[in-house]
Image 1: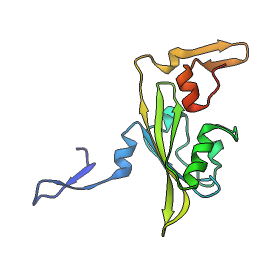
Image 2: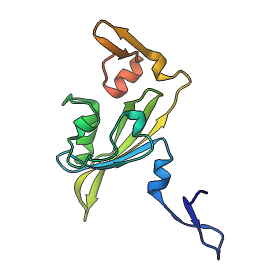
Image 3: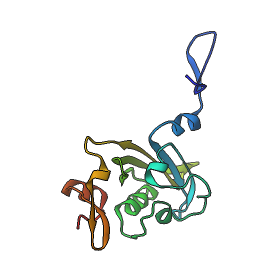
Image 4: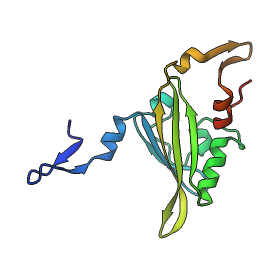
Length: 156
């Protein structure tokens, strides 16, 4: 398995898993923040599809990392719910589809110290790039009503 799984020769079963190598091979992203919603880490093979940096993100504001500076965005609201101890969902558009994920409170000794997020790419039958529309104001993504509701991104 290309060094991703290590096998215990006595039992023949996988004995360990290199998660960073595995995650780098998957269309997924994992990230963590602190209590002020500043990035503390990110990894995953899905970072390029979202146009996100893989290095130098520590301390970066969450809104800057996800290129969503609207303070009332659903993404920011969902992270705030996770900071409050709730499980929340999120959806991020990419050119190929959607990254749909879950946000959990990140705890240390029972106390919430930040947020951990995991999102996996779903690729629809109709590529997102074919849903780009050129307008006088630039380019926009043609979203369905359900996608607009789920993500909070404007349909326009």
